[in-house]
Image (cartoon, rainbow, N blue to C red):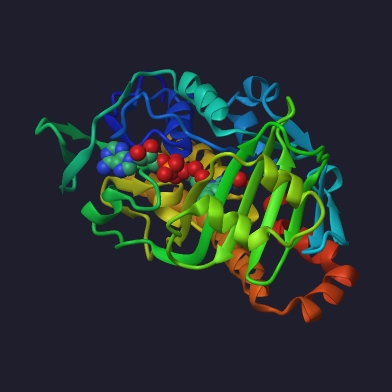
Length: 368
Ligand SMILES: Cc1cc2nc3c(=O)[nH]c(=O)nc-3n(C[C@H](O)[C@H](O)[C@H](O)COP(=O)(O)OP(=O)(O)OC[C@H]3O[C@@H](n4cnc5c(N)ncnc54)[C@H](O)[C@@H]3O)c2cc1C
C-alpha cells in the first residue's frame, strides 16, 4: 500500500512500537509515534535475544546494524547452585538456519530501533483518552490536544493504557518473581550463557562483549526489597561457579517485578495491541523482544494485504496467537520447576535437561 493515507498512531516507543513503526514504513504507511517518557530516559541493563528475534529483525532489514552489537551466544549451560553442570543446550544447533542468539546492552538496541523507525518519536506525549467509533479513533493526549486516526496501535507495554482505554483488559497479573539486573565490567571471564539454579531463585550471567557481563537474577517474590543490592548478595552469597566474583563486581542493580498479560481479544474496532501490551510473560524464555518484533512483521503484512482495517487486525491476531500462547505455556512450565526441590530436579536435569530446554523453543524455530 505505497503512500497509504491511513492515519496511524503508535502508542509507545519500546521494542514493539519502534519495530511496528519500521515494519509499517516498509509497507508504505507513515505512522506517528507517541511516547510518554522524555527522550533523555535511556533503557538500562542488557537483553538476551534468541535466534527467532534475529530472524524477525532480519525481515525488517535490521540485522546488519544489530550484528556488531554485544556478543553472539553459542551455548546455554545450566548448573546447580554450587556450580556443578546439570545440562547444556547447543544454541548454534538449535537455531541453525534461523539466526544467531545475542546478548547486548538494551540502550544500544534501542538506538538502532530509533533510527530504524525512520520518523520522529513525539516524546513527553502520553495518550490519556480514546473515543472509538466504527470509522475512526479520537485520541486525547496528556497536554489536552486531540487528533483522529484510522488505526491506533497500543505498543505501550505490560501496564498498557491503550488496553484499558479500549476495554481490552485490565491490570497485568503478577507472575511471581522479583528480578535483579546489572551490567558488570570487571567480573570474571564467562564464555557462555550460564544459569545457576537454586530453589525458588536463579542466577544467570552472560557475556555482552568488550569485557562486559550481563547478570540477571531472580527469586520467587512479589514485592521488591528495600535494598536490592543487599538482597542480591544475601540471596546468592552462597552460590558457586562464577557467582562470587560477579557479585563482588556488581556496583548497581535494577529491580523489577514480573507480570503476565492474557487477553480474550487484542483489538476492538480500530485499536489493536502489540508486544507486552497484548501478551507479556515472565522473561524466563527471553521471548519478549522476539514476540514483539514478530508481531510487528505480521501486523504490517496483514495491513498490507487487506484494505479493511478490522479484518486485517483479526488476521494479525489469529496468526500471532498460537506462538504467544506457546511462549506463555512454556514459561509457566519452566517457572513451575522452581518449586521442585533441587534433590528431585537436578537428577532429572542431568539426564534430560538439554532435551527439555530445547523443546521449549520447538514451535519458535519455525517462521512466524
Ligand atoms: C526484568 C525483565 C527482563 C527481561 N529480559 C528480556 C530478555 O532478556 N530478552 C527478551 O527478549 N525480553 C526480555 N524481557 C521482556 C522485554 O523487555 C519486553 O517483552 C519487550 O521489551 C517488549 O516491550 P514493549 O515494547 O511491548 O513494551 P515496553 O518496553 O514496556 O515499551 C512500552 C513503551 O510505551 C510507553 N508508554 C506507556 N504508556 C504510554 C502512554 N499512555 N502513552 C504513550 N506512551 C506510553 C512506555 O514509556 C514505553 O516506552 C524482559 C522483561 C523484564 C521485565
